[in-house]
Image (cartoon, rainbow, N blue to C red; front, side):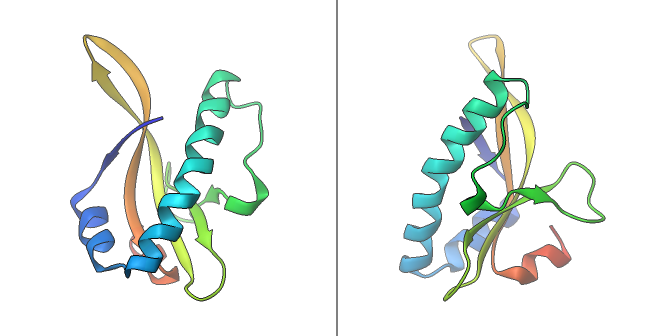
Amino acid sequence: MRFQTTPAFDSDFSRLSGNEKQLFKRSVRLFNDACDRFVETGGSTSWPSSLRVKKVQGAPRVLEMTWSFAGPDGRATWEWSHVEVEGEQHTAVLWRRVGNHSILRDP
């Protein structure tokens, strides 16, 4: 799955500990596979329960993915996007924020 990041995501990511970065990257592998399946099936597949993908209340088009449940609490917000590669449009993920539950105040 192709992706882009926002400046807020980049800033958030730089503040994560080394362990948090590893946990996030590990979850992104599973997330990317799930995104590919979701797009291929037109949204008829479900997300892996371990990622707890769901809509963020009060933020249209924004979803969250939980990459760690305990020690540390890890979440990332994202939305569907598109990127152009060699003149063709491709579905992509726009990573908006990453960190703990507090990112949901400004997803």
